[in-house]
Image (cartoon, rainbow, N blue to C red; front, side, top):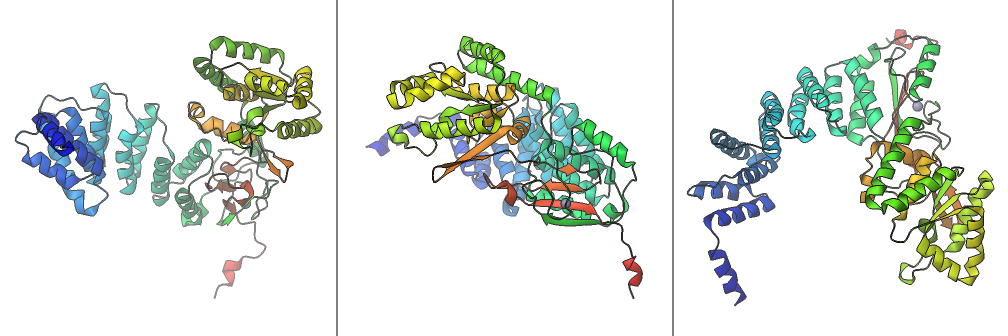
Length: 497
Ligand SMILES: [Zn+2]
């Protein structure tokens, strides 16, 4: 019965709808050969832009398989050419897919041309449209062409990501362009925290190579120091310093920030004050869009009058830590332990941010009332309004006051994604205090004493943090250490037979 109904339904489809439904199926299963038969068997394939893009999507997804690669390129170009002669306007997805096909053929110049033509169709350009040309040039060793794509992409205000920077670094290493290698290391430093293993391998190959041992400047040490201070620490950007071969090792960093291989001290690069202020404003404006505006405005004003806190506490995160959610229990003693610890250490009361609803229910409990009242009397408690998301409140307070934030919340929810990752990452690294309770005993984990970013020292050494898995202990992270050999007292090379 059901089966027959289903058939009847299908028979009612118009040829266009049937074509589309088969194409959707091919697209979902990434089935190139069925897509080709569909195209060839249709009396007059209905090439709307939507259909064309689906075909091209299937083609560009079939490039990695050597079995389907050739026919994918053939079909893709055939369709695109057919489309070009008719009165279609390709969109960004069309051009990105065809650029991928061109790059797969090794035709970087055409891939670049297609990507640039996005602007002729009045579509906002995306990084992904330019990636095929960039990677094609890099893989083909065409360094200068790759730099041209990079310059074009930057002129559009788009920013390259790690995989593109790594490709540019690799082609520069292979071409022995020391100035470019230097620039890409700095771009990675400025944009990333942990560097992925494959990128670290490229950096390592540079330092182990002959060219790296030949480059180097002698710069007045005081000048280097001045520039590092001016940059806010962690880099000077003056160029390769020193001379001779590099000693390259995988190592770790001790908790106090010393390299276990060359014993250099890594530095802590705090976030810049004006950048922090800008970030606080963006938190506030996003909060205002999502919260009852007057509530958040009131909090901002309140905070201005009470800007003396050094530490902000995410009350709910601590009170609910390891509690039974089903029972809805809230551990006031855990929260109290954190408050006491912070107070003992800093001799100042922290700001506890907690929902008003929670505060009210704690006040109703006679055994907890006194403590809550004490916090209120000390001005250590802010109750966020009914219906609010307290995340906005504690985050804004901690950023605005340039203080520490006690929470185990990794701040990866969608609301935090709106804030962008680069600055937020650096801010968290310097300001987030995590905690555990081991057999009921509190342990606060302060931010690391050094920054987990690529660091260039005044001696010209480089330290590169390798990306680690989630939530691993900072001390177990692998770093790449590249430093110049200390001056030798004897020239060992003369002793070779
Ligand atoms: Zn080192």
